[in-house]
Image (cartoon, rainbow, N blue to C red; front, side, top):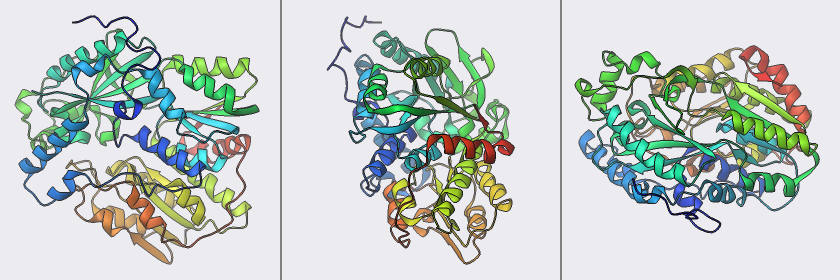
Length: 470
C-alpha cells in the first residue's frame, strides 16, 4: 500500500468537512439542525429530493441501479482516503455554530434527542464521531468478507494520517439495502477530544458551564484486531438481532433477496468480541479526554448512558413537557419524529413535545407506543415516519404508525407526504419543517433550561427506562 506523505493532512490540507461527512448521515443532520435552531432558523433548506424519489414505483433492479449511481457520486475513492483529515472535520463542525458564549454543551453519540436537549438548553451539540462512505466498485451485498477486505484497505489509508481516530465499518444490508454492495459505510470515532473541540470549549463556554456527555450503550458482535479498524456485520439500528445475520436465518435471506443478493454466498468473518460497543458508541479515550479537560478547567461533566434509543427519547419528551408547563404552556401536543425528519426550532416555536424514533423499525415504533401508553394523554399527536428506502422484515408498516397517531385525543395526524411511497421512497429533512410550519405558534419560547435542571429531570424520568445519569 502506498505510504502517505508526511504532512498531507496538516493545517489547511485534506478534503473539506462537507465533502468527507456522508450527506444525510445522522450526525451531519443533527449538527445542521442544532446550529440552525441556535441561530433562530428552521431546517427548511436541509435536504433535497434524491434521484430515488423518481423511481418509487420502478422495479427493484431499476431502483437498486439508481441508488448505486447516486451513492457512487458522493462516496470517497480509495485515493481520497489519505486526504481525510479528522481534525479539519471537527473544525467544520464547530464552525457551524454562532460565535458567542454558551452556558453549556452537549456532546457524544448521535441521537435526535441530543439536538432537542441542546436547543432546550440553548447550547451546541458536538458528535463524538462522523460517518463517511467509500467506493466499492466491484462490491457485492452478500459478501461480507470481501467488504471487510476493501474497508480495511481504505481504513489503513485514512488511519495513516489520523492517529487519533478509530474506524468502525458496518456491513448491514438490512439497513442499507443495495448500497451495502456499492459502498462501504464507516463510522470514524475520535479517541480523544479533537483540538478544534477543546479550542471551542475554551473560547465559547461560560465560566463553570456544565457539559453533558451522551453515550449509546448498545452492544453488537465485532471483529477488532487492534489496528484502529473494526468490523461488524449488521447493526442494532437494523431492528434485527445478531442471530438474524447467520447464513441460515430466514430474515437474512429476505433481506439479501430484496437487496439483490444471494444467501448462498454469505460467509461473515469470525468476531473477536461478542459484545463490543456498536457503531454509535463513544470511544473510552474520548470520554476520558472530555473528563480530564472539564476537570482541569472547572466545568462539571455529567454522563448519560442509554441502553436503547427509546430511553433517551422518552426522557427528553418528558423533560420538554415539564419545561413547557413550567412556562405556562399546555405541553399537550406531541410530534413523533423519525430519522432525519426533525426540526428542533419549529418544535420549540410551536411549543410541542418531541419524541424521536431512530428509524422506522418495528422495535423503535413499539418504543413510542409503550411510552405513550404509560404517559398522560396528549391532545394531539403528529407522526412523521421517515421511509428508510429499503425493504426489511424488521420495518414497521403504516398501520403501526397510524396506531401511534391514534393516541391523540383530539388530533391524530400521519403525514401523507412521508407515507407516500413508504417504505422505499425518500423524504428530505425539510419535509418535517414544512409540516411543523403549519402548527400554530406558541410564543414566547420558554427561557432556556440549565444543564443541572436537565440532569435532574433526566435522572428522575429516565431511571425506569434504564437511563444511567452520573
